[in-house]
Image 1 (cartoon, rainbow, N blue to C red):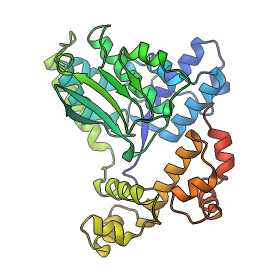
Image 2 (image 1 turned 90 degrees about the vertical axis):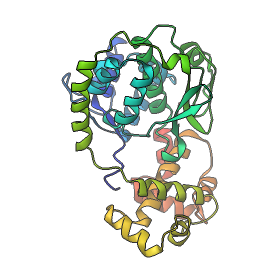
Image 3 (image 1 turned 30 degrees about the horizontal axis):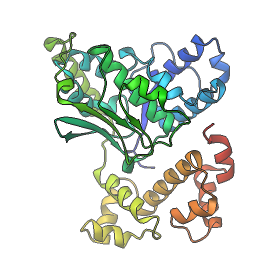
Image 4 (image 1 turned 180 degrees about the vertical axis):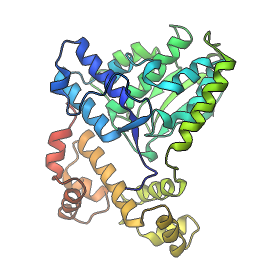
Length: 336
């Protein structure tokens, strides 16, 4: 896997999960599969997403709480998101705050990039499926935390106009609608928060222009230390993902769709520290793991959706990627 795709969250998120279990009088240190981060842990995104998902899955299982993302997200505060949180707090209004979140999101949630799209008289904050699906608990913790923090900065009645998730529909969505205060749908194309224009102009009582200037300087410095993102790799992965259900992706087809020669695409991927075969494998692994975690599709169906002619080839590839069989992965990671 190449460096541009770090897919990480702050270790402080894990600390919040430990504190959540502590509040329920559970022995979190014995239950969770990764060590408790120190109380003064760095607030940069340094916890691999696979570790974060494993922590959430384990906690949800012990708590028998499939809505853990919704519950945990409401416990996250500015202290869990560091300089970005205080920069948002120092902004004049919610529009400015979200603009800064968009620019500096990688500091705290280097998983799926957020896109701000005009939507009638408001905006849609979009996390699209083409950049990967981090899993329901990861996704729902982050979206809940964002709305919870916005309420803390504006007013308790703050509510989006609509929220959608790409995740499977839970047994009950009443609690989601009660928290977000608006219609909430699942199994949608993208994960989206819709906000109206009036909400965007909500003033923040904590606005501090002088502090904001210092915080932005610090944030720029932190952002500069992160590995560069590669638009090329994102584009290759998106195109590979589109081809998979129909055929085994060939570099010639992807290069042609990008108006590049095969040699040019190979050279650019090499310069980015990867190769076409590595990126195809990365896309297949991510999609396979999602299907195994979140659906009941059989191995034959998953193999076909990934462009394999037979499921035995898929099983061999999956063992090479993860060290275990697809069946073992499903048993270990299936949502409860």
